[in-house]
Length: 370
Ligand code: G3I
Image 1 (spheres, protein in one colour):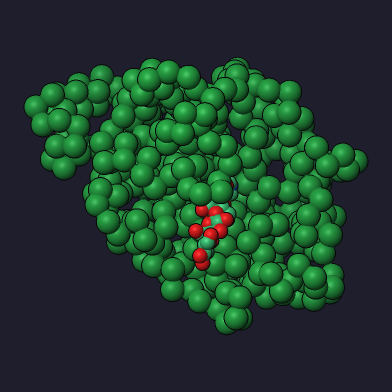
Image 2: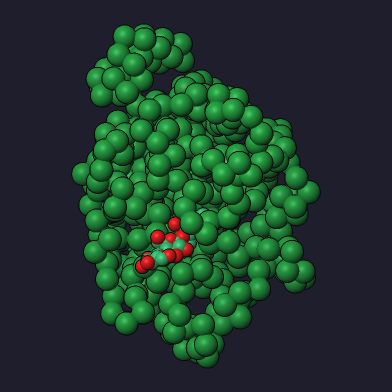
């Protein structure tokens, strides 16, 4: 099976070029290949670039899941002047439906993208506003969302709290001990959706990642003791070439997460090369090697049910946008996705396809809700 995909892709690519192979529609895309082991594969999108080529064709070919990159965030819905604008979020939901793709909701609560008016609210006013926002958003898309990120990025051991939680507008005004209530509200508003906690910095082999893994697990254990309705731990997986990676450590952590009864979704995968020194070929090879190791590890674990890329091509990736984190010293744009700025598959595409196709272990469907 694995060889078949690669040979098909290699054969078609040799005849038509990679772009031609993508257009030709003669072989399964990434979503189709992932589905063979019972898993979903997809991308986050923003309404703007998702309606232009090459992204339109890439999504049609490869997307089994769609996440709204920003459109379902609180301050994207509620502008400075008040009022609620769901048009961009509706457009993403409609796009997923047209593609026949599952829809991930991102995100019902987060310390970023909180409407400015609430930064100075009283705790009571914040709780009222967050509750109303969550209910309206989750109810609007009820029945259409496969998984909601209910809560995003609340763990931060660097803040030195005894509970490992992040100091933020959310911990201050909603209250860290009340986070489970967000999941209860989400379950009540959309009983069909799986409910996820989504976090970054859990994947690589660095001491600070290990601290984040421990703190996240402790928090999840406490939530589950309180019977919090949570189904999934989302691993953002914004990987970085400059950090070490240990498949064994990641797989052991997946074991720990699945012992809690949770499934795993990879929710925002990309690979940053800000510190990589070398030409484009060397950089692409290094990025591809990390994709290969990471995706292969994920596909070998029965708790991993979904893998979503953050953005589609190197032209639309968030890492090259103004004011979004590290830059490369040589000023060159980063190349973190599977497709170059023209939408042509890079070595990372072949590495990911190969790893999805090799999936030795199917997703354990018995762990799924409903
Ligand atoms: O919508 C406004 C626009 O009106 C304004 O003119 C423009 C000027 O800067 O800003 C626009 O908002 C920006 C928004 O993206 C939409 O483009 C925000 O400034 C910008 O901060 C925001 O960045 C997003 C970031 O989350 C914060 O929400 C990135 O695009 C998005 O890729 C990133 O995604 C996050 C995940 O949600 C959570 N995990 C990490 C990941 C990467 O940081």
